[in-house]
Length: 153
Image 1 (cartoon, rainbow, N blue to C red):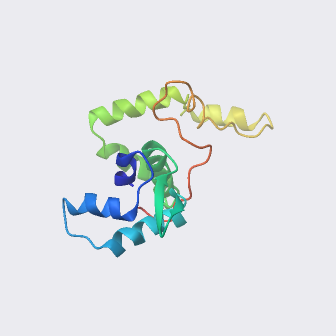
Image 2: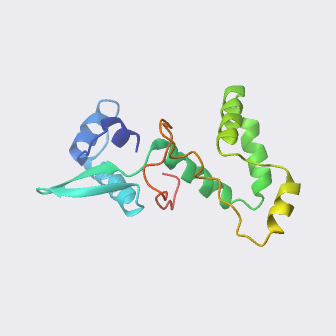
C-alpha cells in the first residue's frame, strides 16, 4: 500500500516492481499477487489498460491504519486489556496525538455517560465521523466506509 500511496496516481505492477527492485530483489508475480489481494480486499481499485491493470488506493493511509487497528482490537478476547497494552507501547508523542484525536471526536470515557445514553431509548450515537470530513482535516477518509480488511496487510 505504501508504494501505491507514494505514486499518488494509478500504477501498474511493473512500476511498483521497478520501484521495489531499487531496494531488494522481488519477483513480478509477487507484486502482482499482493496487488491482486489488495484489490480483492477492497483496498485498491483497478482498471484495465491494455493487457495490464492500473491500481489506485481507495482510501487514505489514516483510514487504512484505523481499519487495521479496529480489526485487531475487535478480534481480542479482552479489548480493554488490548487497549491498555497498546497505550503502554506508545511514546509520549503518540499518547499526546491520541489525546488530541479524542478531543476531535469528542470521546467520553465516563461510564456514567454510557448509562445515561442507554436509558433514553435512542440508538447509540456514532461519533467516529464527527469532524472527520471537516474542511482542512488531512486525515478525513476518502469514502464513508473503510474497505473490508481480512488480514494485516
